[in-house]
Length: 389
Ligand code: HEC
Ligand code: HEC
Ligand code: HEC
Image (tube, rainbow, N blue to C red):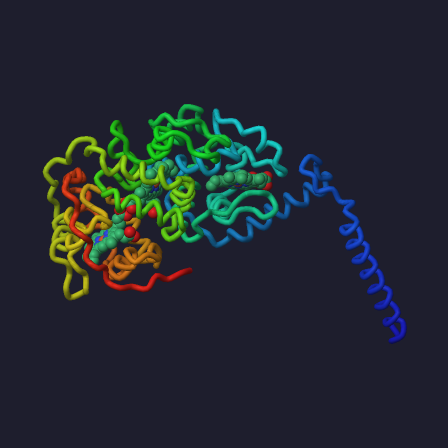
């Protein structure tokens, strides 16, 4: 091809591209394209958007490998979160979607039907990152993959779930209002608020509830209030507790903390600690620390008589204790002065020491009911910078 011929072809192609570009801009500018959610896409647009979504999720989630997801407590925790965090849009067995939500476009998928078309890794990616231009939100606490996996564990079980089983997993034994928009609306009475907490936390009739959910009974009111405020203002990250705490107004927050702090110890007192080598190893670290590794005795701070805002660990679920110590080792839960104390201690513990300590604390008698006497004033915590991220 001669040079002038190539040049004129290039000019023609550029002219066509510029014309198309300007045409597209004019079309957008004119407002002729209808963004109404009440109007369906053309079939081809619909197909294209769906294709883009599927290919994007497939590629973005390629490197994600799922942890074991069969733990019934993981499924239960995922189900309890699903009821408040997902069902208002997606519905569930025996819990139809609200008519308002059905007018979203695209309409939130019917997950019992849609979930099996995705692998666990893909479901994880969607639940963690959300989907642009659809209204599907990202997970509130982006650093809490452990929580997102609980939801995935539940989504895997969802397709085969009966209405009754869904209700048991999502709502537990507590009588709670059905989901729908109610859950997102302003809070009601004290009983209604507590019924929400009872979906996951212990009640008089089910004292041990879920091993992955902390026992609250026996903690001081000061610690419970502080924890709820830290969730509400995002200083303690949890995609499960942050939205719940943020919905509580000050009076309700104090009420909820008071309820658990004043509650009589529930359930049977644990029998004499079942001594095993593991528990004994844990007890030694808890009482004497490991001085050569810079690990202080846990009970210096975690015994009943410590500062009111220091949590008690006696009788707490081992799985929860392990989970929280791992958060500190991953550099999380360190954004408050109190959290920074543990951030300096937890990374010094080995996996085995963490397991031993958790087994020891769980084996100690059920959390003690707080005494009438006010707790001693808190010792000045070690100074640590509050980091933002
Ligand atoms: C505010 C409403 C809303 C909430 C809350 C919500 N979603 Fe969605 N979700 C959507 C919308 C809208 C879509 C897009 C539907 C589509 O693309 O077909 C979607 C899509 C999805 C999909 C992909 C379905 C498919 O086959 O395309 C999954 C999986 C999903 N959501 C899971 C969840 C989970 C798990 C939660 C709770 C942690 C949740 N969603 C919370 C609105 C919501
Ligand atoms: C969907 C389940 C769920 C519901 C409902 C729920 N919680 Fe929680 N809660 C959790 C989980 C899981 C954690 C641990 C979160 C973490 O890793 O930080 C937690 C942690 C807490 C903590 C911190 C405890 C500690 O030892 O540090 C407090 C306080 C608390 N919840 C209070 C409440 C109150 C009050 C309500 C009701 C208004 C409530 N929760 C409702 C699951 C739930
Ligand atoms: C110098 C005081 C101090 C020592 C020593 C200490 N802790 Fe802590 N621990 C704290 C404080 C303060 C918190 C509350 C942190 C927060 O609110 O985020 C805490 C929280 C915890 C929690 C979370 C409890 C909950 O309900 O969420 C666990 C688990 C824990 N510590 C385990 C340990 C173990 C195990 C040891 C011993 C190896 C230990 N701690 C030693 C001060 C201490």
